[in-house]
Image (tube, rainbow, N blue to C red; front, side, top):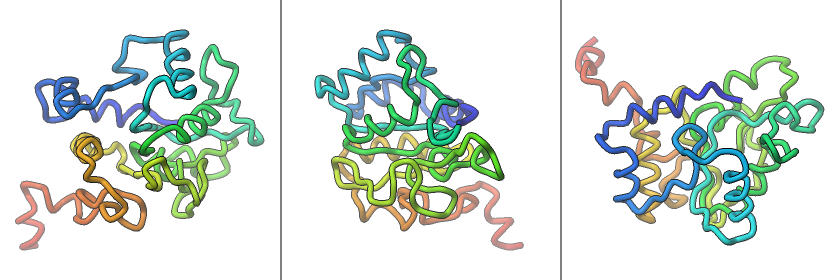
Length: 205
């Protein structure tokens, strides 16, 4: 339910060694559809290991909206080789995750794919536009007791994603670190243009 733009944005992160930066923070990337070598049966085996508790899942990061159509079956978006809709996998994995993070506006609110009378019945992880609910429901809390962490943006800024992951790894992201929409306050408490090098021209009109 997304364009892959948030993953493309992440590749533009201001770091000389993306994987090394994650490793230095104690983050082990289990799998990413574009950044990992594993495919097919090896990925399904890894996901089953997570569900069976053999592999720990500290953070489940989802990019793209969740497609519930047609008619609530989720069959517009299947995980190849499993016979199961992606929404089923996301719901099951979310129950095992320490934290669940929506990466980008599609995963957070539903994004473009949720607009209008669209048969895919797209939604965000815990929101449908500005209404709380989404795939996981308003009452969802991760194993760490947090609602979905919404790292929104279209595409989201790579620094916001990495800073959020670093804060999670350091144990510094709790309920007080999120705003009313579940966004990390480290970036959501100020406007984007406040960090722009041309901001002085805006301030002085």
